[in-house]
Image 1 (cartoon, rainbow, N blue to C red):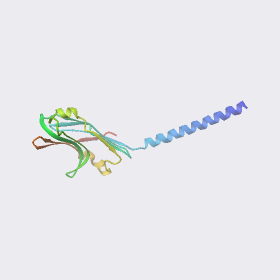
Image 2: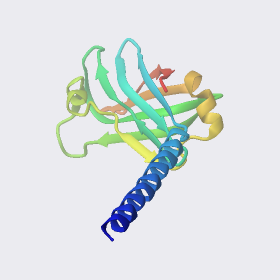
Image 3: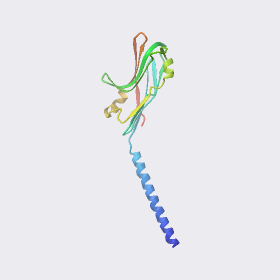
Image 4: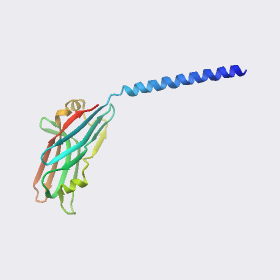
Length: 169
């Protein structure tokens, strides 16, 4: 009776281990077959520098983190409004991927680089389909950043940086 019980337990353990191993192998192969791409980007002109930008493309989700901005130009004061935008340049048309802005109605006017020391992060966004398949194919040559600001007297100033994009995965 004890031998039969021991045989039954051994057979049950073998079956349980086989199920566990096959399930683990199945899910590992499923995870390994998921294709995703990772791009980093950065750029610089005489006034601004962008660093640590990243784009992650999963089959069902896309993530863009704009990284950080550093103002390296001459001090610019009396700024009433500014916006930071990452976009694809499509034959002269800007297809915005990520944009955020700052407008101060009542406070003291902003200055660069002081304001960007406080608001260094460009921001991030995620969604199922931020970029089309064609956008992803052309992203290395067409990703740009713009910093637009308006001075207190209404004069607009625009800084544009063509971003260097590298595929790392």
